[in-house]
Structures are given as C-alpha cells and as structure tokens.
Length: 249
Image (cartoon, rainbow, N blue to C red):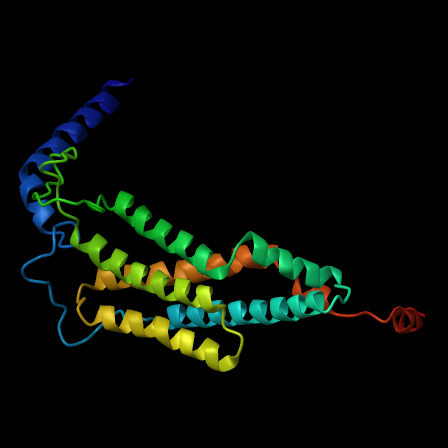
C-alpha cells in the first residue's frame, strides 16, 4: 500500500473513531423510532408532509382487493361447475388449483410481516421483547429472560398496524374473499380505516412513510405472487379457429 493511501486510511479511521465517541451518547436519543415509546412524541407542525394512506398506497389497496374479488368470482364459478359435474376448462382448473396453493390474505401476512422484520433489522429496532429494560443501541445487550428489553417505538407502531390489518384480512378469508363490488369496497374501506386510525397518533414523518410502504409493498407483492399462480388474463379469451384462419387469409 502506498504511503499516501495508508496515511489517508489511518486518518479516516482515527477521525471516524473520534466522531463515534463524541456522538455515541447523543445519537441514540436523536432517533425517536429506536427508543421505547417516547414520553414526548416529536411533532412536525400543522402541515403533514406524508399522508397515511398515501395515493400510491390507496391505489395498491384497491388493486389488491379487486384482484382478490376477481379471483373469488372465478373460483366460485369453477366450484359451481365442478359441483354440478360439469367439465372444467384448463383455466377453471387452474383457478381451483390457485386456491389450494395460496391465498391473498396469507400472502399479505407474509409480506407485511416480512417488511416489518426487514425494517427491524435494517434500522436496528428492538422488537418482540417481553420484558422491560432500557435498550441501548451502542451496548447491544443480549436477551435475558429475567431482564429482557423493551421494543422500539418504530417497531411498536408499525407492527401494531400490520397486525390489525392481518387480523382483518384473516377474518375476511374465514368467511370467504370478497365476491361482490360491495364486499370489496367494504374491505377496502376497512383497510384504509385502520391506517387512518393509526396515523392520528403518529407525527413522525419517517414512520408515516414506513406505514405507507409496509402496506403498499405487501399489496403489490401479493398481487404479483397470486398472478403467477392464476390463469393469465390473455389465456382466458375463447378463440374461434375458423374465424382466425379466415382473417389470416
């Protein structure tokens, strides 16, 4: 290694170490999402920069619910034909098989919880802890069954919203997915209500962003996963071979 490179590297290490030592104590307390529920929740003023739900999240929820409604209708039709001993088309059989493999509620739970745990890891949040002991970012305490440590504020808010959303969707799954436009609209409104109720108590703009992204990500990934297991829309059209041949000629 050249002398100039070595000196630059050494200076960077020493300077970085000095900064860490000076700011180690204050950095933790500058992040309200890392600490346990703060006594004084930070405010952002009268203007909300990030609405919950955001337009992108509202659209994601709408597409998720409508895709679920469409799937339930197709599956109900195929089940009716099967019950009446009618022959199923290849597409109808695939609709029935898609229900046997996965469903919208379970995929949403998988992706929403996956997002929360991803943020927990990336942001070093404390999560899923049973006992009460002040958490310190810089000491990295190990879990102790007698002492333990509390969850981070960001984790508590995000996980609470996701759990309520999943409880709603699992109840919908138990009674059957939305079959009518009215049922779909009711489900969509209920999902948005959960976000609206939770955001009333959250003034931290960063956390509001995560609330949006968690639901947006889960809806988008669920629709993507289910579309891979359901018949492709283009394959559902019936083709008149005689007309197709005549047209080509």
